[in-house]
Length: 328
Ligand SMILES: Cc1cc2nc3c(=O)[nH]c(=O)nc-3n(C[C@H](O)[C@H](O)[C@H](O)COP(=O)(O)OP(=O)(O)OC[C@H]3O[C@@H](n4cnc5c(N)ncnc54)[C@H](O)[C@@H]3O)c2cc1C
Image (cartoon, rainbow, N blue to C red; front, side, top):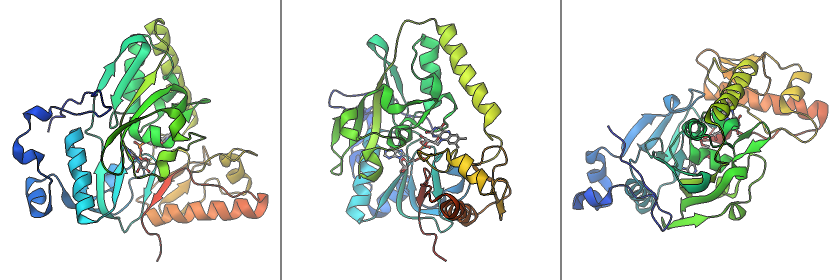
């Protein structure tokens, strides 16, 4: 399937080629009509859609290809009275083995990048952050070099305020386009979003990010920016375990010490439960070494929290979003 081009509208929405859609397309995909059209499918396995490669099925799943389809999916869930979960690249998610109730909306087909004037770059929510970093570097625009090794979408990166090497999304964002709880397009400024260390107001809101505009520093030598970008990637590949499925850092770093150091101090480096292991290389990573279940990973998270609390009186807070039920 090809991806419909998505372009930003003046009202902040990123409508695709709505004019070419038929009247039928404009109908809400309610009930059997939606299922027949194949846009909303039932019982889709979520494990392949996450970087941990664990988790059960989505009760309902769709991958809208345009802003309009996204609105229709949200409207369908609302009309059916079922919850929705947004899924970007699934690189910061631990989804339970029991799967997720309601409608999971995968954003990976919501693509599009536009280089604007004066070093501004707009992209749709499902665009991989890596693509933005590379597009900016090719242009000689500086400011996203640090983002090269983060395997998420722009939408997920905005929600998480993803960052590395002392920089984060909040440093470069000038505007975030969302659909609010009424599915109305709105433009928000960073000041509206209460950004903090791996936090934003979006994490506990019913809003859907549809796109964002970033301000970079233009007019640098492209080869220099590309070189810097590659340097960040090399540095990351040599210090972090990228060879096995993970979610990156599991815990936010407490102010006192890095989470990985605390976990190492309590002797959990390399510790395994089932198919999951606390990385030998970087103790804030949990790796799916051998067909781990989500429960294996969840139990390692709880164990690390317990041990670190006992020894250091520090409660490690998961950065990874834990979704679904982990009760026995
Ligand atoms: C190997 C590896 C290295 C990593 N390194 C880093 C790093 O250096 N720095 C860092 O910050 N993170 C890192 N991460 C974690 C992860 O890549 C980031 O948090 C990323 O920003 C998540 O983006 P995503 O698209 O995968 O979001 P997902 O994991 O799919 O979702 C994350 C959250 O955002 C919500 N969401 C996603 N898209 C939308 C949307 N369009 N609208 C509303 N809500 C949405 C989801 O519901 C969920 O709550 C790493 C992960 C891996 C696997």
